[in-house]
Image (cartoon, rainbow, N blue to C red; front, side):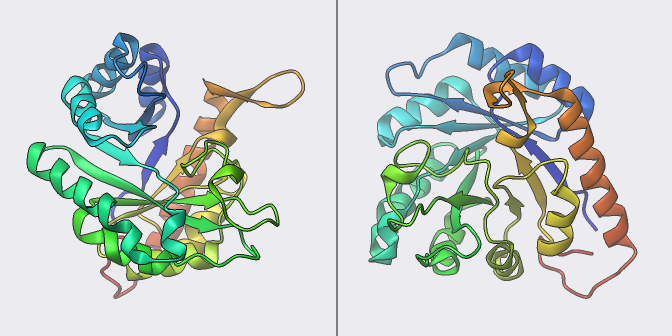
Length: 269
């Protein structure tokens, strides 16, 4: 099988990025936090450090203005631009995806060497509100290079932007998405799917074995924690990352023992 991708978010410091690459992380993800502070020299240095170390840089802009996104890409020049809008409007009407498709088409035209990652929202297992995950993915696949699953939070009031940790976007919940739906997504997709959503050293092996993705992404569950046990955003725990990588590689070895005729980019076993 192809080597499983290990992707780690949110890395904002060049020295931390260098250390993570040395541990064996393949993709290093960083975040541009707002349109007011979009040009960050330290973050730009982080992207350069990742690339110089031979890893892949992935960058999330937490805003949606197309012109500013293009300026952001021109400034940082990441290997991957990662969109993580919550896409909740598509619950009612898949035509709500049209502006996102258009933006990705424009990005490909302007920056053909920058690959596009798109987060595909998946509710938690057993969530009361259904979400058209597979239909959303089909609509976005022609203009996307990677999918990343991530968890939509439903606290019993239905899926809404306000329920998510960052309003309007999906991610950093620390909670697993439905692996059953994620497995269906990896099976149907013609592009690589990276599994995210509450991935930790303790569940990374089972996550790979149950969903057969092209890679694993972790953010919250590989963060350092404060004295109360609360994750510290933007600070990784190297021991957790090292342990998670070992579990992903263990799953990779085990999957190699069971060949399959499935040749999708997520199940080339």
